[in-house]
Length: 280
Ligand SMILES: NC(=O)c1ccc[n+]([C@@H]2O[C@H](COP(=O)([O-])OP(=O)(O)OC[C@H]3O[C@@H](n4cnc5c(N)ncnc54)[C@H](OP(=O)(O)O)[C@@H]3O)[C@@H](O)[C@H]2O)c1
Image 1 (cartoon, rainbow, N blue to C red):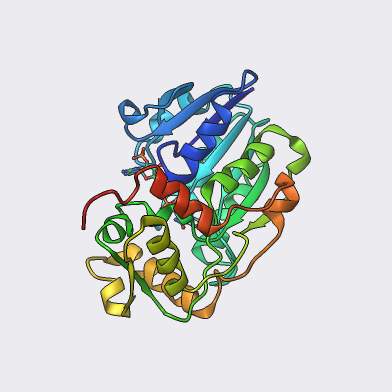
Image 2: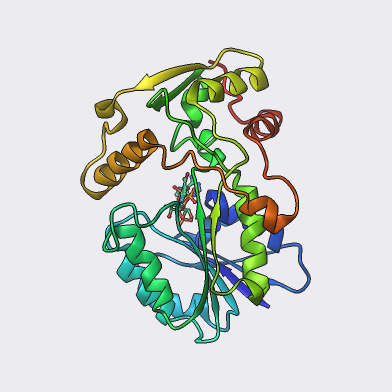
């Protein structure tokens, strides 16, 4: 079968490519706004830019299933609807959504993205994961700060049921390749909800040096952001405070028939792989 991953260089897209590329029964296309940067064995790079709709039909030609990573921009609901209109009518869509998409009501951004998929006329599966453990290694988030011995995060009391994107990828693989998951919505989390100080302690243990938790203030956490990105980040941190991302579910273990990966295992694997290897 032919599968397209829309964001193959991203945290979930790359983990999903790791699973699908070795399969003999899958021809895998990896979408990126700059396909020259896609460097993954067994992945056919394709241009997929949310700014260039002209290329969408080519990326989607003949696909049996597509994994959609939603762009973090205000017009995402319309973009996703238009993009799906260029997929074959028989294609199955797996959406990388988020926890509690109705948090801002049925007309909110996330709920509208999900509705675009449901109303696309394609069969679908919704994945609703919590925060990815991989943001801890992403230099676009806190990867560099952790390398420097600090873990900045707002709301000291807020527990997070961090999920490993390798677990999301495992569930996505099932949903993309087996129509038994059509019409299902999966609420995905890691196995436990941990407060930021515990995350810092696990990082310190894995790295063998201190990583100190620093509580970020609201203004500090929004520094440098504007417009939709600022509003979305402010809302997301408010949801962190309210405990939206602390809810633990058993969907990963139920679907994959093994326990979800723990934060302790993730930080150990990442440290062993040389993440955060910059000297502080
Ligand atoms: N992050 C979380 O904890 C979380 C939790 C729940 C849901 N989600 C959802 O997941 C989606 C993805 O969010 P994300 O923030 O985690 O992004 P991501 O998957 O890491 O990356 C998304 C895209 O950013 C581009 N990109 C730019 N610079 C990159 C770089 N240096 N390395 C890799 N990719 C790079 C890539 O597209 P190009 O190849 O086109 O540049 C990539 O596909 C969003 O819709 C979000 O709502 C995220």
